[in-house]
Structures are given as structure tokens and as C-alpha cells.
Length: 179
Image: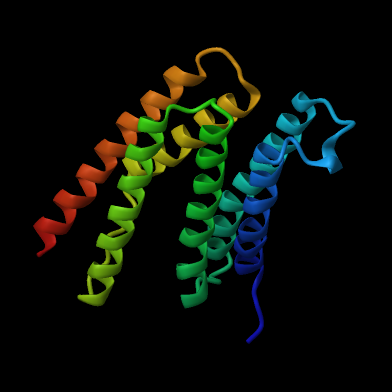
């Protein structure tokens, strides 16, 4: 099977996630001995921004070029979860993200992923809502601010938590109404 461009971009995101995580958490590595810690933040943030851009482009190209595949339907959300999981856990491990905020976000992500898998097993589709798309953007903005240790990063993280939980609520309502 040949991999199309959207799937290649999603696969690239899969490999970028652990690389970004490495820059965030392996700060004591002898490999980084001569590099100031702020540069590790910059590298992690650059990888995150590039990976986030692939998230936009793989979906856009798949829709515009009619290249949606079953592999892409699995690979894209997996790559998204790997990227956000790596970012949030890395940020929590270096003390920039509140563990409760990360717990709430990740719990919602796992729960809704399970709900979507269950719905697919029942032959139902729970499409991403506008709130779900806003949730993703808010999480990405919060992650960027936290990586750069910028002002208002914690406020943005808690706003992302609120939107994340609300979009999870919308998924649950959507699932129960279609049942």
C-alpha cells in the first residue's frame, strides 16, 4: 500500500511527538550539556509548531484532493493524541503545567476517543464539532505559551481545560441523541 501525502504528514507528526518530548524532558542529557535550557524550549516549541501545522495540512489536503483513507482516519487522531500527550506530559514533568489540568484534559481525551471507537463499532459517526476544533486550537495555544514560559500560560491552560471538558460534554450529548 502506498502512503498518500496526508497520511505521510500524519505519520511525520507521530515521529515528531517523541522528539519534542525528548527536548522537553531530557534536559540533563550529556548531549545537551553545552546548550542553554531556553534553547531546548525553542527547539521543542519549533517541533510542536511544525507538527501542529501538519495537523492542519493533512486534513485540508485529504479533503481538497479527495485523499481520505481508512489509514488516515486512524493515523490522524492517533498522531494528534501522541503530540498533545507528549507536550502536556513533558510540560507537567518540567513543572510548567498543573497536574490536575493535565489529568482533566487527558481523561477527557481518552474517554471521548473510547466513545468514538464504540460509536464506530455501532456503525455511527461522531464528527468533530466546532467546539472540538476550538478545543484543539486552545490546547495548541496553551502548549505553545507553556513551552515558551510566557505570561498568561497557566490562564490559557485552564481555559483550554474548560473548553476541553465542554467539548467532551457535547460529544456525550451527541452520542446519546443519536442512540
